[in-house]
Image (cartoon, rainbow, N blue to C red; front, side):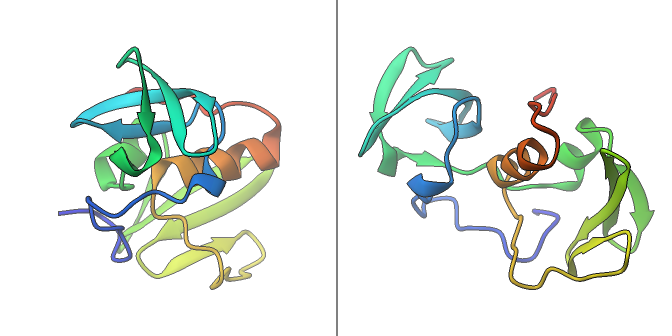
Length: 130
C-alpha cells in the first residue's frame, strides 16, 4: 500500500502543468525520465518513445521511495529531509517546515512533485535511485 493517504489513482492522468524535464514518471509499468514536453505528448528516456500524456502516471511517494532519497524516518509516518539549511517533514498528515508551518494547500504525493519542490528550493536535480 502507498505510504501517503492522498495518492492519485494509478489510472488517473498526471497534470501536465506539473511536469519538468528530468521528472520521473510511470509508463507501461516502467520508471521513465521525461526528456521532452509537448502540448499533449512527452518524450521518455527509458522507453525511447514520445507518448500521449494521458498514458503516463505519477510515481506515488511510498515509504520505500522516501528511504531511497535518503529521507530520515521520523516516526508515525513522517519523513524528514533538509534542503539548503532548512528542515522539512513530509508525511500522511501533510507537509511542514522547520518553523512548524504546515502547508495544507501543498499536496506532495508523487515523486515528480517532490522533485519539483526540491529543484525550486535548491536549483539542483534530486538524486534518486529507482
